[in-house]
Image 1: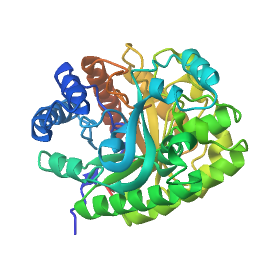
Image 2: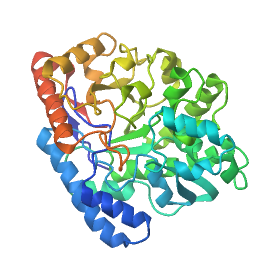
Image 3: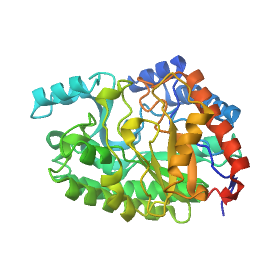
Image 4: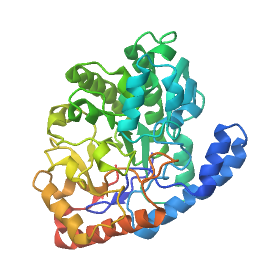
Length: 394
């Protein structure tokens, strides 16, 4: 039975990703071009993971990740680990979609470089070639005794991203058919992560926000948006059903679902805005133990009730150079405490610091300073409110 590692009150963690070094970016690009063997890439990536871990430990983070250093981005990395999935630049996808001009205009309006970000596109029968995250967990566990969070793209995000009618319909005539395969693959992975000792398994579902904050309009660049129904309620019901089937595979391990408003640009005007309130009824149906939500940006509005779930509270903005003060972070915590008990509150950035390898949101030094500000505040909160109480990492 995996060891259960204790967490202090107000645990500090990250949403997952960490900026990649120039050396790692070069190795990622060479691997994608087929110019770097797996062993050579792993040697570079191993060093990068250790550096990302060291930065978290130095900042005092309680629940660590591997910084997603082996991934080209937070969801496209699956293309390298699944048969039947091909990584396409958004520019390549322009040649596939029916509404080329509309898609091009969308990318321009949202400040998305068509060649910098890639999408995993289903082009045949999907099958697991190698574990999605189990080997990442094993490497990180060999280098730390801290509780570990493992992040995965959620089943709704993957289904919408991967199913592009013009490329996918020969293997999967509908998005729902592909969704069944995605659920099977992710459920198997989540179960293996739980048995291997993951302390927290987080599923990333950022496109849920597009359904309500975009009022049903295509507002996200993740080609995901190409496969959405017109009725947001139908799409949200589909998303919740997929998520709950995957979450069930985690057993007793703590699970979370991360929902944000986009993390591809430092230009806040291109990102979605709106309260989480319209999503609250759907959050209530999720079986995840925790909701990991952004609240460091005014675009998110005031905290809303989590319906009895823990809250992974976004208290620093990964897209800004200014390092938040302890007072600013404490103020965000105090607002959250009006709707969530102290014992259910975790502190994290709004999103990852490097969701897209080639387009990090911040430099490592600033990211580390933001983590240190979070841990400083957490220590202060533990002295002020010790009733937050010790907890298990699971």
